[in-house]
Image (tube, rainbow, N blue to C red):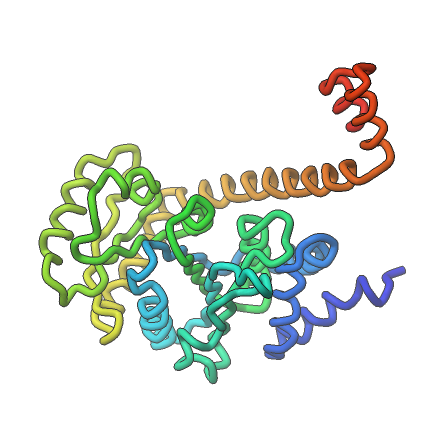
Length: 315
């Protein structure tokens, strides 16, 4: 028999699939909190997913990713597709929530029923963003979003990993973006399917495009050569070319088998992260119990070595 607590995510999902945006927001909040709540959402959504295409958008802070994302959403909506946006923001040190609000950066889309924008932060999720974001993307997929854009705030390890696991990954740079060594250190050259040179009305854009093309000519290991698109996101310039490039990459990815290969790898990586987060939760439990205190006393008294004590706790 299903308890009312167990049934709540299913009830919310039904409402969200019928267009209730408040219910969708509550589902995503459960995902962000992690633990049993996130697990209950995953249980009711997993059979409904697999249709949405994910696009990761990353790049250094200040590159214009949010404006570009908004411009891209506008272009995608002209093709009459439903779009979900997960904007990965830094966590507030006071509330734990996203510092930048859902509507501040892309408020032109707020009244569009086929666009849903959500800012996400680590909040209380033990597994962090790398666990919460795939769950959130599945929720958007399950409620009927055909495309899910995942925009990261920067190019830290977690952000690059999140963006790099999308079906198509866009790396946004600006003219005069810096040396190639730093780009390679950040892993941007490895994950990019499309490069966007935003703020292309600035000086140095031709040199930046040439620099990218030169680096890409040295790239090996993939049949796909990343496209380089120039945009001026504040004016919507280049958005249609970017949308075309995303679709072009998607067509190649599906015909070459890369699409399914990436999804297989992504599922395996996600499973590993979830196991790691569950193990971390188990460690937290062990570290606060009576058995932990006894093991600590035994180590201090030299009755046990740390390895034997650790194995005893795990057993």
